[in-house]
Length: 528
Ligand SMILES: [Zn+2]
Image 1 (cartoon, rainbow, N blue to C red):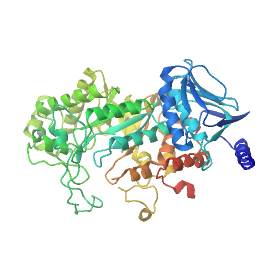
Image 2 (cartoon, rainbow, N blue to C red):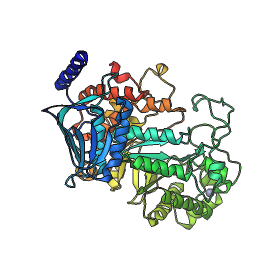
Image 3 (cartoon, rainbow, N blue to C red):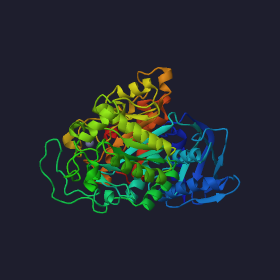
């Protein structure tokens, strides 16, 4: 007993000296002299209304996995020795205030989103010493809200599939870092993973490829000879399950259906969708392919609109991402139907045909009450004023789009491509596509660079992308996104209060939570 007291005494003493370390950096976070809250098996989570109990239950499960007990969730009045959770409509939806004292932990949020963010901050404060089934939280006043409204990450499940459970784990990572958009890349040349009732071959045929390139696609002619992808697609029920799982964690799921390029898997399923009309197979290597959706055929638009109608029915998000990137024009140049479309519509060239394609699809999506996001190539040949542009490749693309007045999401590859190497010593790293994006680089991403105050209003936020050509396992997913996701989160949530050396200090604490969760994170910033 004496030993326990002295351990607890040490714990309390160390807490009183320590700074509260939360990532991403809160807007306001100051230590107070209210003592230390003892978080133990008898601590209850008291929510003011049923609406808040879902987030509280998720938090109970999260701390339960680490502390070895799950705090009870009760609906009712605030009490001592409890985490009291309530709404304050005067706050913005994602905003929260948290006061920790020796008496209680009091949380108010502008909505269930705000209170959930508060609990994620609290989670970072409740990391126990090894083997102890309790934790102590130091008294603190936190007032916090995100800078950017859109803070996202994309996961490509086409090149390598991820199961529903793995997708949920990815969503867990997002919510821990207070990101709020999961961009789900569901169709590409190497696999179509989105279920469409009306066109069953899209998944039955398009989910599978005969084999997969070995080594870097740039210089490899070796294939593994192993069929890939049988059964690797989602059912609509599974997608609903993921959407609900994400929603419970404040995350909106934006689906992406690629067009007019990156269409090989769809062409393999329904060859009439292509300009040549035959001879397609799901891609077995990575890259950009000349065979794309034929822009001259009415039947192409009919299928894509029917696909989008099912996507729109399934996903509640206001956006549908329609791709629009990397569409070679070689087939369109040779295709009489595509050429006729150009002539009939007085288009100057194939770039304007791409613009025609995107505008037509956008009109359909808009007619169903939704808006499109497209990769920056939708700027080529002209873009409508209502499309949201996701800038990724050319440094100037996002700036151009902002100057046009389009809404912009910044996802510049130089800062936000998490499939790139994290070290210049590539030999010591797991095999990757190339590039070099260390944590410090992610931290430097500036969505407002070169924009005046008027143009800045068009920037709705930022996103990082995880392309999966060279990422076949969940273990490697974790390695590629952690801790870069923390730097992204801080750029999005705490843009106006960033401080890299302070971030590195706070990461020492978040790292303990990564360890407690058993995540396979990259260690570079912890060895500097
Ligand atoms: Zn064509």
